[in-house]
Structures are given as C-alpha cells and as structure tokens.
Image (cartoon, rainbow, N blue to C red):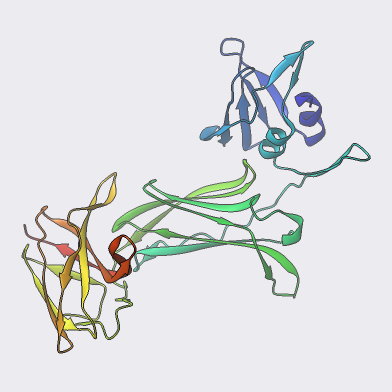
Length: 306
C-alpha cells in the first residue's frame, strides 16, 4: 500500500534525509523512521529513538512511490484494520488520545510496584495484543501488560492494563509506555526510591517462619549468618546477589535444609562482598528427569560488612 496515502489521511508529516535515505513520519511526539530496502524501523517519542521494529517486508519504491506491507503499516501507524475479502474493502479505525498521568509514588517500601492504565475505548474494539502497557526499570527489569476487559466506574466496558515492575534497592527510573501496536501513545519516566522496609515475608512452604524477623528484608553484619525458624517440611535454598547493570546473579545452587521436628537451621554464605542478596526458597519435587524444584518465595539479606 502507498505510504504517503496513509500518512496524509492519518495526519503524519513526512521528512526525508538525503544522506541516509531514511524517511521520518511524525504526528507530533510520536514518530517512526524507515528506509527503502531495510527491514528495520525505529520508533521515536519526543525526538528520542526508543525501539527497533523488524518489518515483515522492507519498504519498496515502485514508479517513484513508496509502498509498505499492510501489517507493517497497521503496526507502525497504530490503527485497527479489518479486511473484507469479498468486497475488497479495508475498514480502518484510528484514534487520537488525551492522556491523564497520575504519576508514581516517589517513595515505595516494597521491592515491586504495579503500574496500571485504563483506556475508555471499549476492550472489544482492540485485539488483546494491540493495546498494551510496557514497563522498564533501568532496563534490567521489565514487564508487559496487554489490554484486558474490565468494567469501569459507571458500568462501562473499558480496556484495562497493569504491569508489575521489580524495583532496585534505592533509586529507580521507571519508564512507562502506552502502545497501540508499535505506535507509542504516551511515554514517561518516573523516579521511584525504595528502601525495601515494607517487603513482606511471603513463602509458600507450609508453616514457614524465621525466628529472627517476620520481615522479608534483613540486615546482616557477618558474611556467614545462620537463620533458624519453623517449617512443616524440608526445603531448599539458593543465593543470588544484585549486581549493578545485571540484576540478581546466581552465586549458588540449591542446598537442602532439613526441618526436623518442625524446626530448621539454615547457615548461608554471603561470599561476594557487601550488598544485597536474595535467598530463594524451594520445595523439592520428583520429575521424570529426577529431582526438581518449585519456587516458594524469597527474602533479602543486606550485608553491611564483608
């Protein structure tokens, strides 16, 4: 289909770079760039390149006109197209949006934050994979929440999206995007600081308790602490350490802990220096390939002294 026809009808301005031969299409804050013969498209928000999208087919110039594949046009322009094969008619639904941003908390005590978005456009208008909320954190942690159907405050059907995002201890830069296909409807970055002081000890092992605390965040000043507590069954644990730029990196494999008489003693080795450790807890199960493990929760240990 002719690219310029769609750009004109949907209100996108076209500019060309003679040196790189790239073509930029913009409707304001959102823009995307393509290049004839290349399968790579770049989406932009506010003049900043954000994502690369691989086209199904590269754009082609035929008799001086630039053509793009219909699915690529739909994804990049962000419309909903319905093709009637009998009538050979393409129905296009395209919308502009007004966005109200209620922000994120500046201070958060937990290790995760759930970001939510609602669109007043009825859910059945969109396919579940086209309208979505995307979250990134620096960008080690990320999540993606496609639109779901939900009843609004007045009983209306709305498109509801939510995406939990993991938080680093300390400062976080949470990037949030609303997208329709590859089209960016809104993008923002919010600073969130967390102390982990409100992390709950939530473990699926029956009767699990720690004698030292009922919190999911523990400070330690020795690299070989021993934790004691109660559990109705034996379990296993492994240790991960947070590394800047990499997230939590595994530093040990599963080790078994016996719960004799309903109590346990669990010595751990925090041998990678100061910083934040995550103690992952598991129950052991039998599989066709031998012993396996099911994650049952975790808690954190902040090592203050090596």
